[in-house]
Image (cartoon, rainbow, N blue to C red):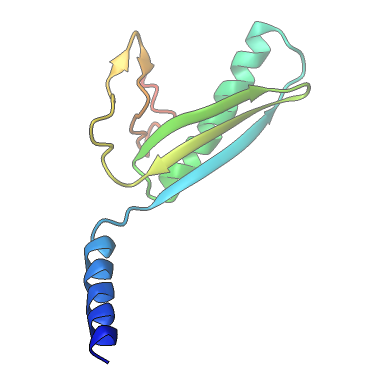
Amino acid sequence: MRSLSRLTLTSLLVLLMVSAAWARVATIETAAPLYDHGEQSVDAALQDAVETALRGAVAMGLSWVKINRALVLENMVTVQLLATDTDPEGEEISWQGGQPGPWFAPSAGDPAGLGP
């Protein structure tokens, strides 16, 4: 009986410690049609897919996103974002050469996070 109460107390303490650290994280995947494989068409489809995914992240209240994967298929471009509502600690979040680092924060007014 004593070991059961120790196990219960330990489990409760672990749950209390873990629950304070929970963050909302989502993987968002979108696709955009690709009509030809020209550079301009791929860029336009990629931007469309990223903007759609970013709007979804903003709508869910997730303030930080990272492009996890982008694929150019025969007739579409797919983009997968990792989004979270907590600050990515220790990660590069600055803009590099006009492009976002691994993590960037889209805003509701500019969901693409690309600025003017």
